[in-house]
Image (cartoon, rainbow, N blue to C red; front, side, top):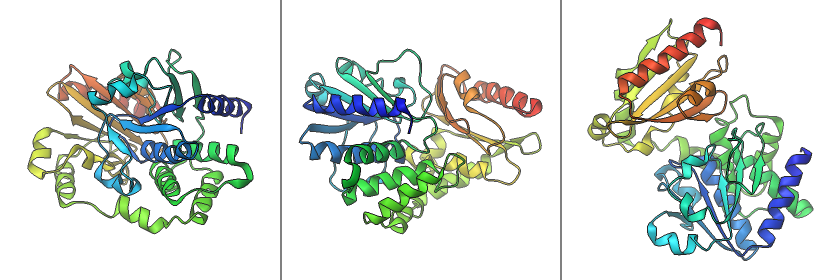
Length: 336
């Protein structure tokens, strides 16, 4: 635990102590880490009798409904503006780039904004307090460490918080497979199991409940796979026609890029997902031999060194494909 991290924890604690209303949020198209982090923190704030709400830009993906048994996660609408415009503190989890909360930013910019994250951040930012640990395996791990820090010897979690934080941990560590998984991540898992988490139930809920529509969409992805440089680079495009034919939703795409990256011989995989005619979402995954967040940054995105993403507007699918391939081929040929 670094001195800077301890200092930011103390600043956050003071900010919470001196506030009444707090909103929690995570990035658009939320994942298990952002969702689990905000749920785990929500119950802590409720124990402090704070006026607290979780308001996200995107709806809760169906696969993660099990970590929200109390239905505390709300999806933003303009009806929330009156409350948001008067909120004291905003705590953002796992967003990477604050542009990923653009839709609600005008309503919260007056508040004290806190960032909880393990992604690189921009030098110019709106944060009053930054809780940042680039070596953390998950933002949920950082929440767990913070709660451990302030609770000290009385560190007991309710089962709803424990389940949410365990979901955050396993989704962002790839079930402890990724290189960012350190020994303390396993200590966190052990502690959460001691709180009553049934890890097999959470794993089954996230990874073993695939809908037929999702499987049908993935069959289209397999047929559309393309490769370059002796299969070192693999990619696929998901357009709206594929979603329509399969009956799948955009939330069903989660995990596809990682699966393609797991094909023998593939070093880098990327997905181009059509959002509109001229807007696309890009997802990158690396085996660990090539850094890819630098490529994501070229397209206005970012993320971890081996797992990153970006959103691109005003280019066709083919133009995006060609530009990304150019960068990745240079990376492969130059050895990173």
